[in-house]
Length: 336
Image (cartoon, rainbow, N blue to C red; front, side, top):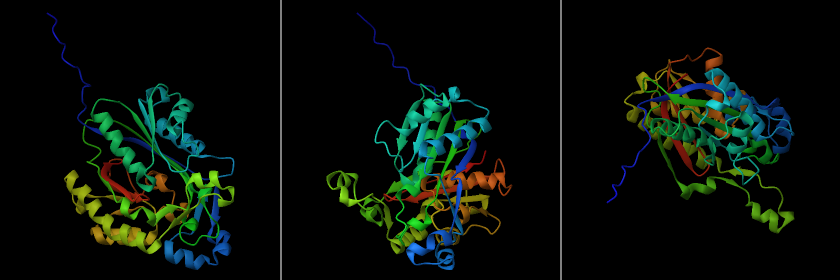
């Protein structure tokens, strides 16, 4: 009579943390004056409504994978790792043109990370925080030792120069983080969710099938209902961020850095007020000269704070992403 063997599972790891963060911005600085004409606007109007002075956009021959690769190589180098050390690659993007294969698989090959697990996330502006949550789970479950998380967008590919609802906000870039095991907790529980009933608040003008069926339909671009998005993000996302702090066992007085999705400076200011963060908390405001880069905005803003000395390794940071879907995710992390 045969004896059934006991199933073996991966050995879990108690803690994980972000080991390194890096970024790559579009090469071109685009001013408000450069884009104000087609939307019948002005530098003053754009600054007052969004806080944006310039945005960064990539060259025509630079694609999402190019941005992602540049950021990923910097992050790996900062962590003292190579592609061969990576067990999983997660890329968050809504602007990669290929339905398949995943951008993550191609990126893994470029980095020499094959045969790392590789997959894409489509969670728009919340995508990086989604990726950090998944990387944390993979490492602590023992399914991967080092996970590369990349938020990469070339939003300018979906800009209608005449659109006054969202296009003048958008920039291009990529941010990358390496997540690995840690002696102490470095990533708090992820608080995330969605509200598909509000999907039309940030949307693509029409599906790709419309262009297939009728070439006259034109290239799809992005639109948003600004007032609805401001109300949702400015008032409903603060409780999500507060819950992330509570789940991590910390309060506003413990937070040293706040990195919200760089959607709009007015939304950032409203969230700071709603959360009651102390005046000494460093608040990321990278949107002023990078623009809204969707999934790339949180890591780009974090990388900038670290590079400019506004934040330091070991600081406790609250980060939250929110956007099209509508989807959101937040967690408290220790900065690398």
